[in-house]
Length: 400
Image (tube, rainbow, N blue to C red):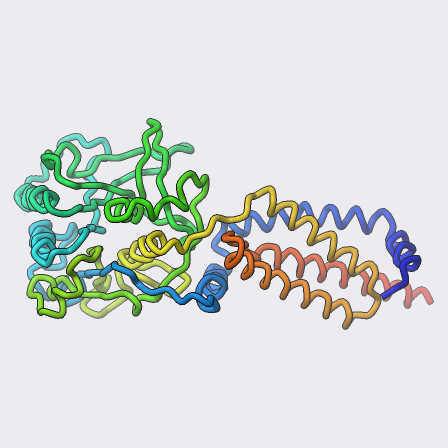
Protein backbone atom coordinates (compact mmCIF):
# COMPACT_ATOMS: atom_id res chain seq x y z
CA UNK A 1 0.00 0.00 0.00
CA UNK A 2 1.04 3.59 -0.49
CA UNK A 3 1.84 6.08 2.31
CA UNK A 4 -0.93 8.56 3.23
CA UNK A 5 0.44 11.29 0.96
CA UNK A 6 0.89 8.82 -1.87
CA UNK A 7 -2.66 7.61 -1.46
CA UNK A 8 -4.11 11.10 -1.98
CA UNK A 9 -1.92 11.67 -5.04
CA UNK A 10 -2.89 8.27 -6.43
CA UNK A 11 -6.61 9.05 -6.04
CA UNK A 12 -6.16 12.48 -7.71
CA UNK A 13 -4.22 10.91 -10.58
CA UNK A 14 -7.26 8.85 -11.54
CA UNK A 15 -8.90 12.00 -12.82
CA UNK A 16 -12.47 13.02 -13.49
CA UNK A 17 -13.31 10.27 -15.99
CA UNK A 18 -12.37 7.50 -13.56
CA UNK A 19 -14.62 8.78 -10.80
CA UNK A 20 -17.40 9.66 -13.23
CA UNK A 21 -17.29 6.09 -14.57
CA UNK A 22 -17.34 4.80 -10.98
CA UNK A 23 -20.57 6.70 -10.27
CA UNK A 24 -22.06 5.53 -13.57
CA UNK A 25 -21.13 1.93 -12.83
CA UNK A 26 -22.70 2.16 -9.37
CA UNK A 27 -25.97 3.48 -10.78
CA UNK A 28 -26.04 0.92 -13.59
CA UNK A 29 -24.93 -1.87 -11.28
CA UNK A 30 -27.64 -1.14 -8.71
CA UNK A 31 -30.35 -0.91 -11.38
CA UNK A 32 -29.23 -4.06 -13.19
CA UNK A 33 -28.74 -5.87 -9.89
CA UNK A 34 -32.27 -5.10 -8.76
CA UNK A 35 -33.59 -6.14 -12.17
CA UNK A 36 -31.70 -9.44 -11.95
CA UNK A 37 -33.16 -9.96 -8.50
CA UNK A 38 -36.65 -9.98 -10.03
CA UNK A 39 -35.67 -12.37 -12.82
CA UNK A 40 -35.09 -16.10 -12.80
CA UNK A 41 -31.30 -15.73 -12.75
CA UNK A 42 -29.20 -18.41 -11.05
CA UNK A 43 -32.24 -19.32 -8.94
CA UNK A 44 -30.94 -22.77 -8.05
CA UNK A 45 -27.59 -21.37 -6.86
CA UNK A 46 -29.25 -18.60 -4.83
CA UNK A 47 -31.54 -21.12 -3.16
CA UNK A 48 -28.59 -23.35 -2.27
CA UNK A 49 -26.71 -20.42 -0.76
CA UNK A 50 -29.83 -19.37 1.16
CA UNK A 51 -30.18 -22.85 2.65
CA UNK A 52 -26.53 -22.88 3.71
CA UNK A 53 -26.77 -19.48 5.37
CA UNK A 54 -30.09 -20.01 7.15
CA UNK A 55 -29.94 -23.64 8.17
CA UNK A 56 -27.07 -25.89 7.14
CA UNK A 57 -24.45 -24.01 9.18
CA UNK A 58 -26.76 -22.94 11.98
CA UNK A 59 -25.91 -23.91 15.54
CA UNK A 60 -29.61 -24.63 16.13
CA UNK A 61 -30.83 -27.51 13.99
CA UNK A 62 -34.64 -27.35 13.78
CA UNK A 63 -37.02 -30.25 13.31
CA UNK A 64 -40.65 -30.73 12.32
CA UNK A 65 -42.84 -29.88 15.27
CA UNK A 66 -46.31 -31.06 14.31
CA UNK A 67 -46.98 -31.06 10.56
CA UNK A 68 -47.77 -34.20 8.57
CA UNK A 69 -48.16 -34.30 4.79
CA UNK A 70 -50.62 -36.68 3.12
CA UNK A 71 -50.30 -37.09 -0.66
CA UNK A 72 -52.33 -38.72 -3.38
CA UNK A 73 -49.61 -40.76 -5.07
CA UNK A 74 -49.34 -42.72 -8.29
CA UNK A 75 -51.06 -45.80 -6.88
CA UNK A 76 -54.05 -43.77 -5.76
CA UNK A 77 -54.33 -41.56 -8.84
CA UNK A 78 -53.50 -43.96 -11.67
CA UNK A 79 -54.64 -47.31 -10.26
CA UNK A 80 -57.53 -46.70 -7.87
CA UNK A 81 -61.05 -45.32 -8.21
CA UNK A 82 -59.67 -41.78 -8.62
CA UNK A 83 -59.45 -42.80 -12.28
CA UNK A 84 -56.87 -40.08 -13.08
CA UNK A 85 -59.64 -37.49 -13.11
CA UNK A 86 -59.25 -33.74 -12.97
CA UNK A 87 -60.76 -32.26 -10.84
CA UNK A 88 -59.93 -34.79 -8.16
CA UNK A 89 -63.01 -36.74 -7.13
CA UNK A 90 -64.50 -34.79 -4.24
CA UNK A 91 -66.25 -37.76 -2.68
CA UNK A 92 -62.77 -39.30 -2.35
CA UNK A 93 -61.54 -36.14 -0.61
CA UNK A 94 -64.61 -36.35 1.64
CA UNK A 95 -63.55 -39.86 2.68
CA UNK A 96 -60.03 -38.64 3.42
CA UNK A 97 -61.33 -35.73 5.53
CA UNK A 98 -63.61 -38.10 7.45
CA UNK A 99 -60.74 -40.54 8.05
CA UNK A 100 -58.48 -37.75 9.33
CA UNK A 101 -61.27 -36.65 11.67
CA UNK A 102 -61.52 -40.17 13.05
CA UNK A 103 -57.73 -40.22 13.45
CA UNK A 104 -58.08 -37.08 15.62
CA UNK A 105 -55.90 -34.79 13.50
CA UNK A 106 -55.53 -31.33 15.01
CA UNK A 107 -56.10 -29.39 11.76
CA UNK A 108 -57.05 -30.63 8.28
CA UNK A 109 -55.88 -28.51 5.33
CA UNK A 110 -56.81 -29.32 1.72
CA UNK A 111 -54.34 -28.15 -0.93
CA UNK A 112 -56.64 -28.81 -3.90
CA UNK A 113 -58.25 -26.35 -6.28
CA UNK A 114 -61.84 -25.59 -5.32
CA UNK A 115 -62.17 -22.56 -7.57
CA UNK A 116 -65.41 -21.95 -9.42
CA UNK A 117 -65.36 -22.61 -13.19
CA UNK A 118 -66.52 -19.01 -13.68
CA UNK A 119 -64.48 -16.40 -11.74
CA UNK A 120 -67.56 -14.32 -10.94
CA UNK A 121 -69.25 -17.31 -9.31
CA UNK A 122 -72.23 -17.32 -11.64
CA UNK A 123 -74.04 -20.62 -12.07
CA UNK A 124 -72.85 -23.12 -14.65
CA UNK A 125 -74.49 -26.31 -15.88
CA UNK A 126 -71.84 -28.68 -14.48
CA UNK A 127 -74.15 -31.06 -12.68
CA UNK A 128 -71.92 -34.14 -13.00
CA UNK A 129 -70.03 -33.11 -9.85
CA UNK A 130 -72.93 -31.78 -7.78
CA UNK A 131 -73.42 -34.84 -5.59
CA UNK A 132 -69.76 -35.35 -4.75
CA UNK A 133 -69.17 -31.61 -4.24
CA UNK A 134 -72.05 -31.38 -1.79
CA UNK A 135 -70.82 -34.52 -0.02
CA UNK A 136 -67.38 -32.94 0.47
CA UNK A 137 -68.75 -29.70 1.90
CA UNK A 138 -71.25 -31.50 4.11
CA UNK A 139 -68.42 -33.67 5.45
CA UNK A 140 -66.31 -30.56 6.09
CA UNK A 141 -69.28 -28.93 7.85
CA UNK A 142 -69.58 -31.91 10.16
CA UNK A 143 -65.84 -32.26 10.82
CA UNK A 144 -65.42 -28.49 11.39
CA UNK A 145 -67.59 -28.78 14.50
CA UNK A 146 -64.71 -30.68 16.13
CA UNK A 147 -61.53 -29.33 14.53
CA UNK A 148 -60.39 -26.60 12.09
CA UNK A 149 -60.55 -27.27 8.37
CA UNK A 150 -58.53 -25.02 6.03
CA UNK A 151 -59.63 -24.54 2.43
CA UNK A 152 -57.81 -22.88 -0.50
CA UNK A 153 -58.93 -19.38 -1.48
CA UNK A 154 -58.68 -18.14 -5.05
CA UNK A 155 -57.27 -14.64 -5.63
CA UNK A 156 -55.70 -13.00 -8.65
CA UNK A 157 -53.34 -10.08 -9.35
CA UNK A 158 -55.10 -7.49 -11.53
CA UNK A 159 -53.73 -4.01 -12.32
CA UNK A 160 -51.78 -3.66 -9.09
CA UNK A 161 -54.41 -5.20 -6.81
CA UNK A 162 -55.27 -8.62 -5.45
CA UNK A 163 -58.81 -9.51 -6.49
CA UNK A 164 -60.82 -12.36 -4.96
CA UNK A 165 -62.43 -14.83 -7.32
CA UNK A 166 -65.24 -17.30 -6.68
CA UNK A 167 -64.72 -20.67 -5.01
CA UNK A 168 -67.15 -23.57 -5.03
CA UNK A 169 -67.75 -23.30 -1.29
CA UNK A 170 -68.75 -19.63 -1.44
CA UNK A 171 -72.23 -19.34 -0.02
CA UNK A 172 -72.23 -22.81 1.51
CA UNK A 173 -73.54 -22.76 5.07
CA UNK A 174 -70.95 -24.41 7.31
CA UNK A 175 -73.23 -23.65 10.25
CA UNK A 176 -70.60 -21.97 12.38
CA UNK A 177 -68.03 -24.71 11.93
CA UNK A 178 -64.33 -23.84 12.25
CA UNK A 179 -63.62 -23.37 8.53
CA UNK A 180 -60.89 -20.96 7.43
CA UNK A 181 -59.46 -20.21 4.01
CA UNK A 182 -56.12 -18.97 2.72
CA UNK A 183 -54.63 -18.28 -0.69
CA UNK A 184 -52.39 -21.08 -1.94
CA UNK A 185 -50.42 -19.48 -4.77
CA UNK A 186 -46.74 -19.31 -3.96
CA UNK A 187 -44.53 -16.20 -3.99
CA UNK A 188 -42.16 -15.69 -6.92
CA UNK A 189 -39.30 -16.15 -4.45
CA UNK A 190 -40.22 -19.23 -2.42
CA UNK A 191 -37.59 -18.35 0.19
CA UNK A 192 -40.17 -15.86 1.47
CA UNK A 193 -43.01 -17.02 3.72
CA UNK A 194 -46.32 -15.65 2.35
CA UNK A 195 -48.42 -13.59 4.75
CA UNK A 196 -51.77 -11.79 4.73
CA UNK A 197 -52.61 -9.71 1.67
CA UNK A 198 -54.91 -6.72 1.34
CA UNK A 199 -57.51 -7.31 -1.35
CA UNK A 200 -58.90 -4.73 -3.73
CA UNK A 201 -61.90 -4.11 -1.46
CA UNK A 202 -59.63 -3.43 1.54
CA UNK A 203 -60.20 -6.74 3.31
CA UNK A 204 -57.36 -8.97 4.48
CA UNK A 205 -56.91 -12.58 3.46
CA UNK A 206 -54.50 -15.01 5.08
CA UNK A 207 -52.05 -17.17 3.21
CA UNK A 208 -52.75 -20.91 3.38
CA UNK A 209 -49.90 -21.45 5.87
CA UNK A 210 -50.90 -18.44 7.95
CA UNK A 211 -54.52 -19.67 8.18
CA UNK A 212 -53.23 -23.04 9.42
CA UNK A 213 -50.96 -21.50 12.06
CA UNK A 214 -53.67 -19.07 13.15
CA UNK A 215 -55.93 -22.07 13.80
CA UNK A 216 -53.54 -23.76 16.22
CA UNK A 217 -51.21 -21.14 17.69
CA UNK A 218 -51.98 -17.54 16.77
CA UNK A 219 -49.22 -16.14 18.99
CA UNK A 220 -46.68 -17.78 16.65
CA UNK A 221 -47.58 -15.05 14.13
CA UNK A 222 -46.53 -12.20 16.43
CA UNK A 223 -42.96 -11.91 15.00
CA UNK A 224 -44.33 -11.35 11.48
CA UNK A 225 -47.28 -9.13 12.41
CA UNK A 226 -47.18 -5.78 10.64
CA UNK A 227 -44.39 -6.64 8.19
CA UNK A 228 -44.78 -4.84 4.87
CA UNK A 229 -42.93 -7.56 2.97
CA UNK A 230 -42.97 -11.32 3.38
CA UNK A 231 -40.07 -12.48 5.56
CA UNK A 232 -37.47 -15.03 4.61
CA UNK A 233 -37.74 -18.51 6.11
CA UNK A 234 -35.57 -21.61 6.22
CA UNK A 235 -36.48 -24.97 4.72
CA UNK A 236 -36.52 -28.53 6.02
CA UNK A 237 -36.01 -31.38 3.57
CA UNK A 238 -38.94 -33.56 2.61
CA UNK A 239 -37.30 -36.45 4.46
CA UNK A 240 -37.73 -34.47 7.68
CA UNK A 241 -41.53 -34.50 7.37
CA UNK A 242 -43.78 -37.43 8.22
CA UNK A 243 -45.37 -38.35 4.87
CA UNK A 244 -48.31 -40.66 4.24
CA UNK A 245 -50.44 -41.61 1.27
CA UNK A 246 -54.20 -41.25 1.21
CA UNK A 247 -54.44 -45.05 1.03
CA UNK A 248 -52.64 -45.28 4.37
CA UNK A 249 -55.07 -42.75 5.83
CA UNK A 250 -58.15 -44.57 4.54
CA UNK A 251 -56.91 -47.92 5.91
CA UNK A 252 -54.79 -46.77 8.85
CA UNK A 253 -52.43 -48.88 10.90
CA UNK A 254 -51.65 -48.08 14.51
CA UNK A 255 -48.43 -46.41 13.38
CA UNK A 256 -50.36 -44.23 10.92
CA UNK A 257 -52.89 -43.22 13.56
CA UNK A 258 -50.05 -42.29 15.90
CA UNK A 259 -48.52 -40.00 13.26
CA UNK A 260 -51.83 -38.26 12.59
CA UNK A 261 -53.12 -37.80 16.12
CA UNK A 262 -53.00 -34.19 17.38
CA UNK A 263 -50.99 -33.03 14.37
CA UNK A 264 -51.57 -30.61 11.52
CA UNK A 265 -52.31 -32.55 8.33
CA UNK A 266 -51.91 -31.01 4.88
CA UNK A 267 -53.44 -33.07 2.05
CA UNK A 268 -52.20 -32.52 -1.50
CA UNK A 269 -51.31 -34.09 -4.82
CA UNK A 270 -48.13 -36.01 -5.53
CA UNK A 271 -48.76 -38.20 -8.57
CA UNK A 272 -46.74 -38.36 -11.79
CA UNK A 273 -47.95 -36.01 -14.48
CA UNK A 274 -47.85 -38.22 -17.62
CA UNK A 275 -48.67 -41.76 -16.46
CA UNK A 276 -47.92 -44.17 -13.63
CA UNK A 277 -44.35 -43.33 -12.55
CA UNK A 278 -43.81 -41.38 -15.76
CA UNK A 279 -42.89 -37.72 -16.00
CA UNK A 280 -42.45 -35.09 -13.28
CA UNK A 281 -44.72 -34.90 -10.25
CA UNK A 282 -47.61 -32.47 -10.42
CA UNK A 283 -47.50 -29.21 -8.48
CA UNK A 284 -43.72 -29.40 -8.02
CA UNK A 285 -41.73 -26.28 -7.17
CA UNK A 286 -38.01 -25.51 -6.97
CA UNK A 287 -37.00 -24.69 -3.37
CA UNK A 288 -33.77 -24.28 -1.39
CA UNK A 289 -33.90 -28.04 -0.63
CA UNK A 290 -34.70 -29.12 -4.18
CA UNK A 291 -38.02 -29.80 -5.94
CA UNK A 292 -40.95 -30.21 -3.53
CA UNK A 293 -44.70 -30.84 -3.96
CA UNK A 294 -46.83 -27.81 -3.17
CA UNK A 295 -48.17 -29.44 0.00
CA UNK A 296 -44.62 -29.79 1.34
CA UNK A 297 -43.82 -26.17 0.45
CA UNK A 298 -46.83 -25.07 2.52
CA UNK A 299 -45.73 -27.45 5.28
CA UNK A 300 -42.34 -25.70 5.34
CA UNK A 301 -44.05 -22.32 5.61
CA UNK A 302 -46.17 -23.61 8.50
CA UNK A 303 -43.14 -24.97 10.36
CA UNK A 304 -41.11 -21.79 9.77
CA UNK A 305 -43.94 -19.75 11.33
CA UNK A 306 -44.55 -22.14 14.22
CA UNK A 307 -40.85 -22.39 15.06
CA UNK A 308 -40.28 -18.67 14.42
CA UNK A 309 -37.64 -19.43 11.81
CA UNK A 310 -38.36 -16.28 9.84
CA UNK A 311 -36.44 -13.07 9.34
CA UNK A 312 -37.35 -9.84 7.54
CA UNK A 313 -35.10 -8.56 4.80
CA UNK A 314 -33.00 -5.43 5.09
CA UNK A 315 -34.86 -2.33 3.94
CA UNK A 316 -34.39 -1.14 0.35
CA UNK A 317 -32.82 2.12 1.61
CA UNK A 318 -30.28 0.31 3.80
CA UNK A 319 -29.37 -2.02 0.94
CA UNK A 320 -28.91 0.89 -1.46
CA UNK A 321 -26.57 2.71 0.95
CA UNK A 322 -24.64 -0.50 1.58
CA UNK A 323 -24.22 -1.25 -2.14
CA UNK A 324 -23.04 2.29 -2.93
CA UNK A 325 -20.50 2.26 -0.08
CA UNK A 326 -19.31 -1.18 -1.15
CA UNK A 327 -18.83 -0.12 -4.77
CA UNK A 328 -16.94 3.03 -3.71
CA UNK A 329 -14.71 0.90 -1.48
CA UNK A 330 -13.84 -1.32 -4.44
CA UNK A 331 -13.12 1.73 -6.60
CA UNK A 332 -10.82 3.25 -3.97
CA UNK A 333 -8.99 -0.04 -3.33
CA UNK A 334 -8.36 -0.55 -7.04
CA UNK A 335 -7.22 3.05 -7.37
CA UNK A 336 -4.66 2.63 -4.56
CA UNK A 337 -3.34 -0.86 -5.20
CA UNK A 338 -0.93 -1.44 -8.08
CA UNK A 339 -0.18 -5.17 -8.08
CA UNK A 340 -2.74 -7.51 -9.61
CA UNK A 341 -2.41 -10.29 -7.02
CA UNK A 342 -2.98 -7.80 -4.18
CA UNK A 343 -6.12 -6.56 -5.93
CA UNK A 344 -7.31 -10.13 -6.36
CA UNK A 345 -6.70 -10.87 -2.69
CA UNK A 346 -8.61 -7.75 -1.67
CA UNK A 347 -11.49 -8.78 -3.91
CA UNK A 348 -11.62 -12.27 -2.38
CA UNK A 349 -11.62 -10.79 1.12
CA UNK A 350 -14.50 -8.46 0.20
CA UNK A 351 -16.54 -11.34 -1.24
CA UNK A 352 -15.93 -13.52 1.83
CA UNK A 353 -16.85 -10.56 4.00
CA UNK A 354 -20.22 -10.27 2.21
CA UNK A 355 -20.93 -13.95 2.86
CA UNK A 356 -19.90 -13.67 6.51
CA UNK A 357 -22.03 -10.55 6.95
CA UNK A 358 -25.08 -12.35 5.55
CA UNK A 359 -24.58 -15.26 7.94
CA UNK A 360 -24.06 -13.03 11.01
CA UNK A 361 -26.98 -10.82 10.04
CA UNK A 362 -29.33 -13.82 9.99
CA UNK A 363 -28.08 -15.30 13.27
CA UNK A 364 -27.51 -12.17 15.36
CA UNK A 365 -29.70 -9.44 13.89
CA UNK A 366 -32.64 -11.52 12.70
CA UNK A 367 -32.39 -9.91 9.25
CA UNK A 368 -31.72 -11.71 5.98
CA UNK A 369 -29.15 -10.17 3.64
CA UNK A 370 -29.15 -11.58 0.13
CA UNK A 371 -25.55 -11.01 -0.90
CA UNK A 372 -25.96 -12.44 -4.40
CA UNK A 373 -26.62 -9.15 -6.24
CA UNK A 374 -24.00 -7.09 -4.31
CA UNK A 375 -21.52 -9.88 -5.00
CA UNK A 376 -22.17 -9.53 -8.73
CA UNK A 377 -21.81 -5.76 -8.38
CA UNK A 378 -18.42 -6.04 -6.64
CA UNK A 379 -16.99 -8.63 -9.04
CA UNK A 380 -18.32 -6.80 -12.11
CA UNK A 381 -16.96 -3.48 -10.93
CA UNK A 382 -13.55 -4.95 -10.11
CA UNK A 383 -13.37 -6.74 -13.47
CA UNK A 384 -14.17 -3.54 -15.33
CA UNK A 385 -11.54 -1.54 -13.46
CA UNK A 386 -8.86 -4.17 -14.01
CA UNK A 387 -9.66 -4.43 -17.73
CA UNK A 388 -9.64 -0.64 -18.07
CA UNK A 389 -6.28 -0.36 -16.34
CA UNK A 390 -4.76 -3.18 -18.41
CA UNK A 391 -5.85 -1.49 -21.66
CA UNK A 392 -4.40 1.82 -20.48
CA UNK A 393 -1.02 0.17 -19.75
CA UNK A 394 -1.01 -1.44 -23.19
CA UNK A 395 -1.68 1.90 -24.88
CA UNK A 396 1.21 3.45 -22.94
CA UNK A 397 3.50 0.56 -23.88
CA UNK A 398 2.67 0.95 -27.58
CA UNK A 399 3.44 4.67 -27.45
CA UNK A 400 6.83 3.94 -25.91
